[in-house]
Image (cartoon, rainbow, N blue to C red; front, side, top):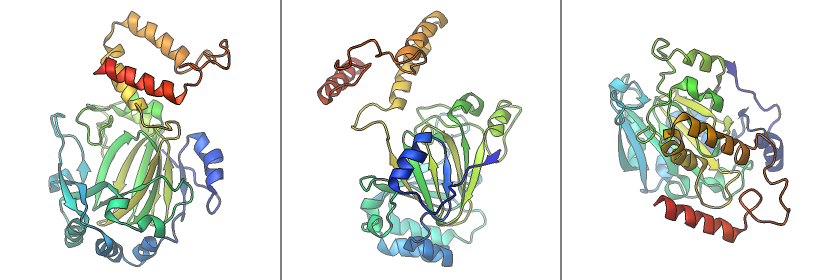
Length: 335
């Protein structure tokens, strides 16, 4: 396992980030990227002060919050039989949850409590204006993650991600997408995060049950982030996140570089392929693999190179009207 590369300068411009960093699709750590944020300055004095400041400013907007029993040891995961989850989810207002977290901060064996992907716009109005991130377009709305000590197993996001640590410390462990076979993904439909999730306990991996995970570890990268630090995680890199302190706050920004308008995600396409192509016998799967290699992955070159440039088609560029028609066609066929 090696350390994730760190940006050598102070902070890139939005254009530098877009053309020199984002284009590489490789993770990168930015030390002190948001060190000047008011919340970070408070957290460097006291985690409790930072949490109380959020509680004082938060609305009563209901936030998705998960709670796991003490015997989960902070691991938010599948149930033992893989048919459900080891935590319960509730809808709770942020001020109440934060007071609860403050009250548990000194406990040695508390419930794991985690506010996940809360809309900053809804629960902390004005935060985005007072805590700007210039690396991404201002239209990208941040989400808020607040927890005590907790662990999330390796999974991938559907969008590119910049995660900024504002309170407490978090440890990120990343795996390249091609390590999927060595991460032993669990069931998809009831996974903890709605996407394939590794079944291996990173803190204590069972290499007898999951022997190939040793290969994944050899290709893994890690970083421990303190308040003010940030990390760029490109989709679909696998990442495990561990909140190391009794009070932790993270603000993240998700955006899709390639999907300009709402439509099926790459993960939707993969799910549909798992329900269809993956169920075929081997000769059929290999036949469709050849077509995917040609049309989708372009392993034999550009499939549109022999077509007139002015033609609008799936292999070239669709007009907005054609995109809408294709999406409507697919919805009709699928449903």
